[in-house]
Structure formats: structure tokens, C-alpha cells
Length: 247
Image (cartoon, rainbow, N blue to C red; front, side):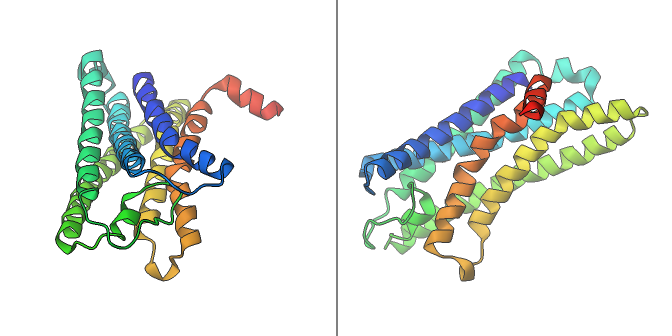
């Protein structure tokens, strides 16, 4: 779990550094422009880190499943080599996803101006500027495939936690159940925060859409989860809990 937390912290740091520094620079220097190359780089790295984070959260769910449901096989199923391979697969999948979306998005001819109405470059805002119906549909197709892949990971997470909760409830001692639940709780909170903000951003009703709300929602899913993840996992540290109580 420590190895996967290291990878998760890197994705959180990467996604924050992709959007926040540029937004702070724009605010301090009272400018709202970004170069075409900078916009493409921002889209690529944001999709890369967010996709890699989602796949890492899925792998971490499998880690919890093996630790609780198959503890005697943990060393065999999740040795150092297996963990390294799974982490590498998450990063590689995130890279491929970002490369496909960035290449396809920035191959679209833009005829609706160049104002995005967001504090960072994101694919839905860029698609609104496109005037090519066929290229637009191609990117929508890629988004649908990515959503299906993400839904498959979601089903795997739900199935794993159903098995985990069934195993935990069979533990005879209350202390053992509490320890198992406390092990899973931070991961469950992080996954819920990540998915709820992303789903609300993508599926919010058009009737309530407005520029200000879209801006708030973008901050909600792009900045809040990466910023809170370290805090959520740190709350398992007893010394940090004692410090917070004293404050």
C-alpha cells in the first residue's frame, strides 16, 4: 500500500501542478491567455495524471481485496515485481489515454473563436469551439470508450468492496473488524470523492449549466480531490490525529 500511495501522491502532485500554477500566474498578472502549445500540454498532462490516478485507485482496491480476503496469498499475488508491473501499467495506460485524446482534440479545426471560459484547458471546452462534425464525433467516440473503460474499473471496485465487506463482517472480534474497516476507509473516501466530482462535472443537467457553475465544478473535480487525498490518508497517522486534536 505504501508503494501505491507513493504513486498516487505523484499523480496528485502532477495534476495540481498542471492547472494551479498557471491559474495563479494568470490571477497575479491579470491575464487570461495561454499559448496553443501550452494549452495542448495542459490537456495532455491533466488527462495523463487523472487517468493514471483512477487506474491506481483501482489497483489499490485490488490490494485491499487481496490483503483482507486472501491474506495468506498476499505475498504471492502482490510481490514487489507484481506491484511494479501494475503501477507501470497504470502509468502507461494514462499516457496512452492522454496521447490519444490530446492528438485528436487538437487536430480539430476551431471556428468558434478561441475563448474557453475556463481557468484551464479541458477537452469539453475545446470541443465547443470545433466546427468539424466528423472530427467532433471521433473525439466523442474516444470519450465514450474511455468512459466504458472507467465504468469497468468502477464495477471492479464495487465488486471488490462487496467481497471485502462480506469478509470483514465474518471476522469474530470487534477489534479485528475495526482494524479492517479503518484500512479500507481512506481508500473508499478518496475513490468516492474522485468519482462523485468527476461524474457531477460530466453529467450535470444542461438546464443548470452556467459559466460560473462550470468554473466551480472544474475546480471541484480538478483541484479538490488531489489536494485532499494526502490529508485523508494522513489521518491514519496517530501523531497527526493527536496534533489536530490539540489544535
